[in-house]
Image 1 (spheres, rainbow over the protein chains, first blue to last red):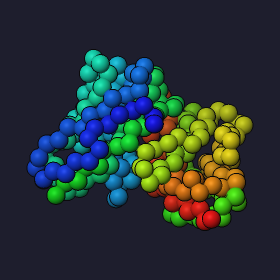
Image 2 (cartoon, each protein chain N blue to C red):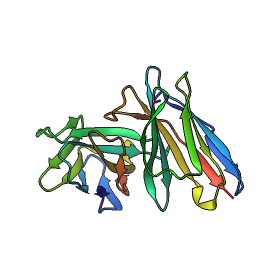
Image 3 (tube, chains in turn orange, brown):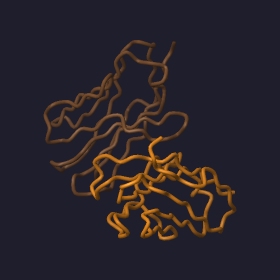
Length: 113
Length: 114
């Protein structure tokens, strides 16, 4: 167990809908990273938050947004969902704002039908 | 653009034998990190080993070691005394020191035969 908790584990929703994925980092970790793992795109970095502020941005679509709350948990919001958004979404956390060693959660499997 | 290439989609090894997974990357940076991650059927991403580019010495973690060839931009993972629990997808990843945009390879599926 990495100590990073992601909920829900599975999510099935229809196209056009909006969903929120939640991540609780390890105790003491200030950074949260979001990744998307899909069959066609592989693993992609989406976004990082450090202590409540956006720190780095990767291949995140405009329909997606994230935030980190004062208690350091993070949410990834996916809207206007398309079939191609079906993927495994990972959250990882690390102590500092530099990703030298981060711990991953078990992911949320999103299926868009 | 920084890219990571894993040229072996699948590999298999006999239990207790040694296997090497290949990874090459493309970068013009001098300060960066390289990682190997394991993703078992449970799907959790587990860090296996990490290498800082400025370190000449190859990283080692128990049965896992790397062969880091900076000039050749190669970063292979050697698994010694393979165990059934080593069966998983293995991802090579790269990150520039001052940028947290991690780049992953497509992965190598490792099968361990008893």
